Image (tube, rainbow over all chains, first blue to last red; front, side, top):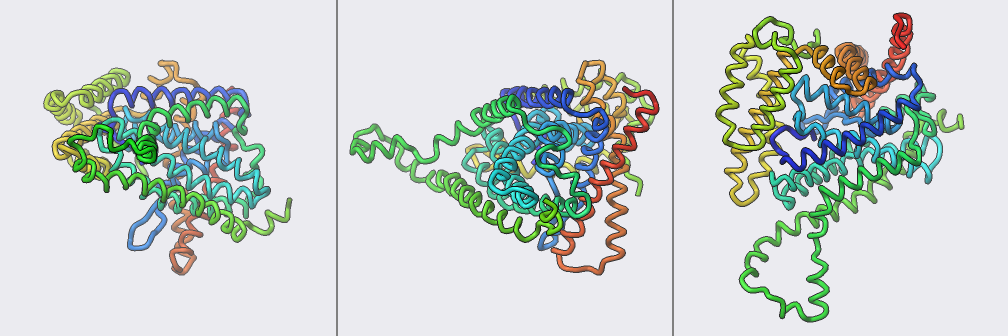
Length: 313
Length: 198
């Protein structure tokens, strides 16, 4: 999901760079205050851990394989601000050392995966925990959040590419999101399996109420929330409004649609219908998928939560 | 297998001797030029090829790096085909992405990461971020080798099962890797304190 250089236009690069610089500054300020000094080296080690974990290939049917993205895993283990720092570090090193993900697109990549994936994912994880407490809530929340983080990042990438004029929304949105509806499942599975493995051996490392890097404070919710919604408003909402044309529908219902000036376009409109329906279908699939994955996360959490961890509460 | 990040960043050549800050700014300038106008393609390509020749990095190595990374760019670029005049946009994007890739590959292989970090520190990048970058860079190879060792040890001891089994055991490796990383971080902290870090 790393956007390479050459795919974004100037506006998008500047906007995403500003958003992620803001997010990173917020995270660094928070960590400076809350992170115990003995935890400082852990940030670097956690970044190296994410990188090493991303290299391990999980086999999927047919000789293909996938790997962990890690945004939600690291947010669950270390908290949202630490996740932003760790993921930004990973992306910077990947970009500067391996040319994986562009240097000018670094802002976009940090925003999509670090801030939306990490902080957004963490917020979802905490929300789910209000419904289900204890280790079971950790697993259910992590599973659902991991899936959401992959899909959200894909939606943002689609929006950024479309705004830059690299590809049309009607093509890039279904292509990115449909693939990531599936990738998200893998991400959720790996995240859950890793958390279960840690719960088995070192359950004290996963403390939902006080992760190593500090939980979300009210001011942070405001700050990150503002950044994420700004990002969504800039890159996704311009397209979101064009899906089912509300005005056209109302006009039709009121009976003055025929009177509207519709001169030479009906054929063009007709030809575009499949392209128009693709984003709609994708968003419907996404919505259905969200419900399904949530239910799935619930049952997975019931099955895989280590009994010992659950009893210890 | 020794895991090396930037095997050619420490050889000696005229390009390697340029200060890191200058190289970083030059690379950014080249990227901006490449992205902003197609007219820059030919001059940028010439500059990059000249730099590559001067840097004494084996051309095959650069080519291999490019080939590894190109599919990622192509995968996104293909989406550009589905629009009016898609062929031209596609070609432009591919050329642009390739030039950008080559720029960053050249930058990373002519500049030791430690020098880039020094530039960051001088540019007033927050200390916590620089420390984290430095530690990540230092322990990257250590953790990658550690995970490879654990994976191998596990593969030696388990008979192959279905892919479900494989996922579970790989996830256990990842989980263990994180536990070991936290333990190592504690030891590093002690070592840093012993050397006067505050």
